[in-house]
Length: 402
Ligand SMILES: [Zn+2]
Image (cartoon, rainbow, N blue to C red; front, side, top):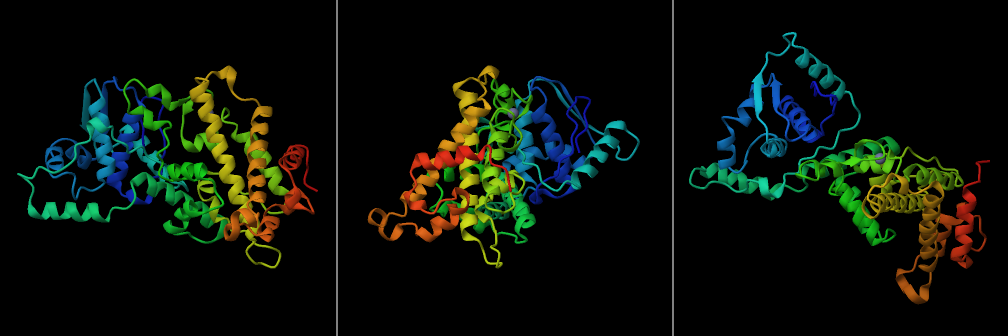
């Protein structure tokens, strides 16, 4: 969908909220202007008269009407705000579609590739606060526009990036379990008492795509370099940190988590952003075909805690160590942190069975055994101490499946 003379050509699949030709045209320009330096003179060549009109002759009216009733308003709003940051001249040129123009033909080819992608790409639709033009010019607004504005604001539930993330989780969970979860199912993770509050907060921000990574920084003058992962030489994203980065410890952590999981005999799925954000929706079955609640609970705790640890390791390296390449945590350090974290979670789970302390809120011993017995190989799980648990977890490193 994007083709430029700069090396940033790409194919992108838009989220379901933006499936239209016009949305594709706006998104292509948006991604380009968010990627190139903000002092670069731009010549945007598009075959979309619609985009040119929206950015030029219609823009005044759109802003007077407070963006009410505007098709693809979140995309167009982000594009207008980003273009306003540019310090050099920006030129919009109309080219004829399918006329043999190299850039236009290449962009068409990229667009065809993009629609075949299985997962939508998260777009940065954030607008810096000083560039948000809010409200309606009441002196020119018609009664019908005011009414539409009130209705559209009343029914809006999620922001667009949240919808994209929810789409990704649904797609993953459907492939994994053959069931398509509703938004409510996905959000129910936040009410789960088996996940610690800090971890829930991380998942909540992940689902809203509101953790400060990568593209969020590209719109902030003077802070653009914070968008990059200096180790992998790419624009950072939550997906990059949790599933691709070579500095966040993700490879080591998912490797040892998978080894631990394999002791239970269940299949470990591919770790994607959808898997991680939808970890509370695991649907493992026991040998008689009934839901294996112990495995589902174990998966949720393992994946949510491991992903939060990866995020913390990344933040420590980026913020406390200033992204110093010589201070990337070693394999041993990462595994040791994971053993401490997961060991502590299991230990807390064991303590939560104490009916004197927790009374009716106490975890039943049966639930505890279902979750951890197989992988801890213990006859007396309630008697295990923290050091006993970490000893088993350290042993996982050398454990091989039978
Ligand atoms: Zn990286």
